[in-house]
Image (spheres, rainbow, N blue to C red):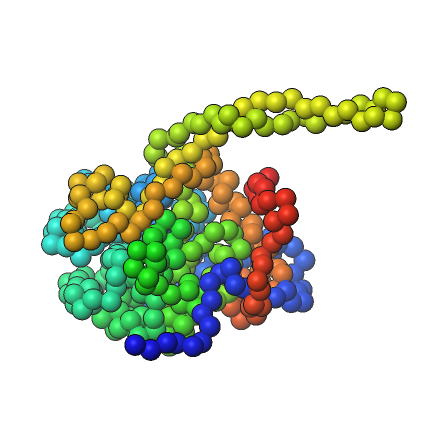
Length: 376
């Protein structure tokens, strides 16, 4: 047993220091990035806004993929789409803004082989909860050896050594994050994890030294966290819970009427020096969508896999507020990211890490009157 004494940081532990800027408007900031990947014999560059919808139920849907592609954002599709749906989608739809998602079981591999006979996905995400097993590394080697023209994303890990190992095994992009997801309970159930900001900094440094790239996956609670992830050196940022609850994600909208009255239309009168206030009262009406981690019991049972008796559920089930169209959220994300760049004088997203200095803090925002609706 040993203890790492160095302090490791999450997004909530820092803010970005503002710096002088020559930018006159947020509209001048360019968010599109272009990458060429290691382990890619084809050499076709990626070009887009490097934000990815996670391969989670309610997020990694075809409908979300089509909507996000309009702004050059990407989507990692859930792996539970049937074969014919995936073949049709990748044959006639998106190519550079969608990822095929799979695990490492024999069934996953056979399904992909059948898919490959009739369609092509340039980006394939090979996704497991624990990227530290020898079996996983060997699977990456085997898969890449049989599919040299595919850009492989592999994860999840949180240390430089495993980031390097996966890149050397054939991956081009490594997914970074364990236990940091908002719908993840791995840290609670197992005590295992790593603060996400430090993981991004350290794994990004290791990947870039080899010519590889990383995806910051998990822990995003607000638009500012996206800017922090890019500032820390992430090449891509993956969003799960943050993009949940939209109509394009499917799922049943749950309507609830609270017995707690909401006060509206405040007013008042003054008579003989006495102030009388009044307000209309109505019951609160809220809309939610159920959202859950993909290692939760709910996800396992939904996809025909009851939770095995040798494992625990490592995902949470959440009620996420229904947010309507995802287009509005995308606009808010991109606007916030442009604003972050202007605060530090970064003309483009590529320059954000060069202009980022993090300040350690013990509080992000004032909560005297609660958080409120940040999107109004």
